[in-house]
Amino acid sequence: MHFYKQTNHVILCSTAGRTYLPDIYKNLNIGRFRPCSYSALTQRYINPKATMILFSTGNITSMGSSTFFGAMRVLFKLKTDLNLKIINIKLTNIVVNFNFSHLGVVDMQALYEKNRGFCTYDPSIFPCLTYAIENKKIKANIFSSGAAVITGCKDKESINESIQIVLSKIKESVSTVDTNRGKTAILLDISNDGIN
Image (cartoon, rainbow, N blue to C red):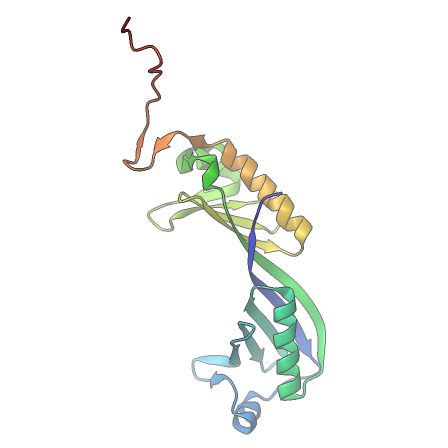
């Protein structure tokens, strides 16, 4: 098992009925509401850190919490503050970060060439390779620095499985590079220097 850090939990849910956002904003004076630019009420919480977005349809999106418990705690606080009846709670995305720099330097172009059907890579537009895990709605952003970000997981099993798939692809494209100079290092055997 590889060490990873969960950085974001996205939860979608609904309320029983539509919500009239101008009244909520006016009466409770919470959040941020600018209907001309964005037709939702946004409320940020500090502890735990999370952002709630409440739409007039009654749908709510919770994002930014590093734990599922934190996301649910903030959702309960919003429910209490606004006296809402919450229904259909669904965890839709867990974002995880992990580091693979201990494996060596990844030849990003080689990784792209070997997995062309499942990834996109254009370093002039975005500094990472995006790998779509086959038969899943999970993607990994793989950076040459040795960091990876996986999105679309819904539980620990899919996190661990996705990390193993990504690591196996990365291991196929590890090269020996001198990172100080950015050039391929030439490994020399100097155990016998020819001096007797």
